[in-house]
Image 1 (cartoon, rainbow, N blue to C red):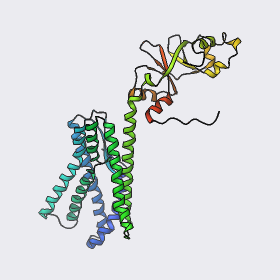
Image 2: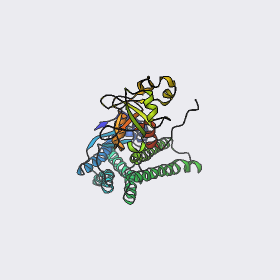
Image 3: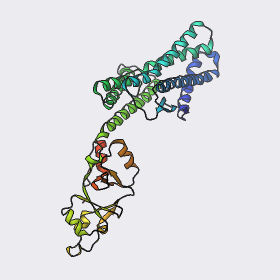
Length: 361
């Protein structure tokens, strides 16, 4: 479990805002009102911790490995390692968090009914009850990044068979929730002529900003995941042929007389070493094409910049991310050059955006 530095920001904010309000209500507390306010911040952190532990423990039942639990400015989150999810399990893990908060709220309510606490103890117990109740209610709202968004995600996932479509739908639901909250809490009171509470408005804006960023991030990530099947070395590579590095420009002109297909030069061991530059090849005088080595008109490939013809998806992207170059030879199972894969083709397949061409010659 990690306590991020940003948590202390919300703790300080709670003391600064809630301390004076508590002092006005309970004059007898004096300076202790600020300690009570800090205790409220701690109880709030414990509530979030129980919420996240509920996620982690329910995930453990499905053998989903938990990497860490983080408490931060926005509350907290549970980070999982790689696992195989399903719509039903995703819902169970998501709703375990709000369910834990409802249990805490119910427990606090029972304690209040006994009347064993008075003064600050009664105040904190009452705040603890309402805080957990509101955390539970807020988190079941049907939109990402809230836990209730997993309900929308799982419903669409189950109906379409695509988790990515479910995540996008839940992300848009989260954006709609943000708009509704801003209109309800900020816009309507202003339009009606009321002066909204500044601290209340600030909290609303901060929370809605966090929700909007979370929803937008979920949509973006799901869109990128949905494009992973399009990332295939065989599908994205342009045709290419391989020639030995001892060849001449004349050999290049014989296999690629018009600059196509691309020409990859290979070392004595058959491994791709570079790519022939068609412009450099065309600039060689006809009288010198038989004496100019192909290495003179080529650019080197990065170390290990060749991929199997069958590679695709996340595995291909992770491998390419480790290389420093922007061009990669594509080879078959016996090492024969079959194509040339360019980094921009991969980026376009992932993002769906074609790079703008420069106006320069």
